[in-house]
Length: 321
Image (cartoon, rainbow, N blue to C red; front, side, top):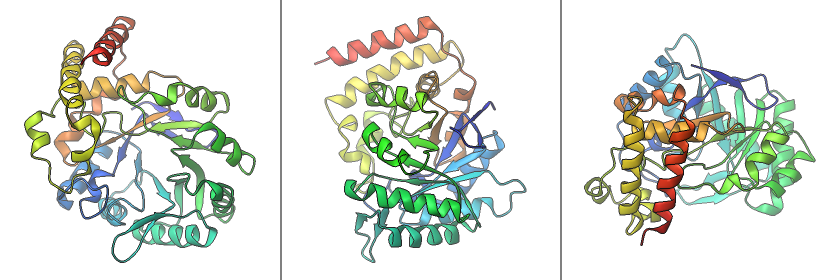
């Protein structure tokens, strides 16, 4: 699988990396409902067998559970992929989540993540959310010190805007940004992507398939059956009237994908990778077969006609009642 340098780091990452948000399971505010840990481990193995060389996780996914599953999946692997994780979301004994960028809190977090992941150093450590905004400088300075101490190799941010990145850059270089980016969420095209490209900040995008909505496997019936503790039940894109419009749009992606023997989800991922500022895309899978259905996005190159057809379909989507 093709690799690209992540920002100014020495990390050569594959254009697809395995995301672990969903395999954190249920039982927390942004869970995806019940999850079989054996299927999660098998999905990670399948992703690595297909050539992905990095895993993106976060302390808060499953309140630590996703990091533990990553460790279990890697314990018998001869070659270890890069491990990226995130900090700044902490929880109490009742599972209540809050933001913290205070130095003492971040230092506790990094030690806990190292323990759960069973590693000595984290390849990329990222601030998950820039909240509280007033504490960004304290948080970023702490990550820079953790890097100098050898706890983490490289440091990045997630969900930051340009003004917030400028503030961080005044303290220490930013290796990468992790923003949401998909056919249904193009906000970063206005300013952020050009800024990152100019300043040689790597970009690893999340939710390129809109949490499963653009995979081609989602239906109204499946959405209706989502567990009560699956956060997607309350997401506007999974509710009417957007749901019906989005599913019609998926059929346009399916028609394009059929030309290349690819799924709608692979078309959606490849579309994000077309942008020169994007280094890689985070793709998740709760089962091995789901990984099989996204892997060809790494080699899919959409033509100018394909891209125009997608834009026309998006315009119809915007005009739909």
